[in-house]
Length: 378
Image (cartoon, rainbow, N blue to C red; front, side):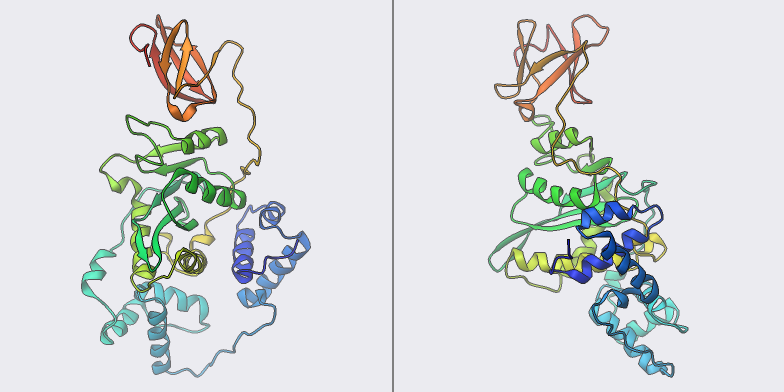
């Protein structure tokens, strides 16, 4: 099947980067990107020989000027700053090192050039000091997902949904959403799961649509994750640092995109998000990665997304009950509440070894413990 016409270069770049990661499964990537192996190997070979220019239908790679003078280099640095107003000396130098075949100025020299031309804000520089954070050892061990605060467009409101791989900082998804409903999140995740596979866990906030509050510990969204074998981790209430990478990424999104642009509608937001996401993953140096790009550390998950979910099955020794009537089950002549999100699904009850105390499981997850005497009544 041929490449889609929209964002062809973006898809080619992302494909060859993922295919170049050690251990990458090219055949599986072909299936997820909907291209033939013949086409895939053609672009991989061209990329290896010519770099990104080899991915174009016609080569337009300009020749380098070996006699470039210092004023020209300075102009190039300032041009980078114009395109990327949030980039400092270290990021600009990292980009120049990847693109130049000669010595480039040090990060401190570039910073001084920016300062001399009035391109640096001292207050902003303090905000972007590097931080050390824990990270998962492998890609797809944990994704951090959250909504950034909504902003107004000319025709409504945009709710940016961000999905970030904890290990690589690879931006798995960036969506311009009309609302923050669970059904909207699920539609976005299906698109992401089909391309990148399933993570082991997803870290989210508390409350709708994620769940984990006293009234609604589970939601239809997290029930779906359980069926897919994805663990849901919730940040501590009033501790945004739990999702530190997501919070830091949201500041980057504001600094590099939202601060400088106004959008007509959600479609315009999504076009800009898609364009910037490609640059963030494959072109923008990341200080926490030693100035490498996130795509250099990411590989797709080996756990493919199942288009049809398998049936829910329990062991022969389990007591199985169907949830109904707003999240309730009947067991031994009494009614117990297990959660409205499980309506229509079977759950299993298992003895704990304590008299009249049972654990309730949905698939492989224990969702609550009940005592036959004190918890009845639902």
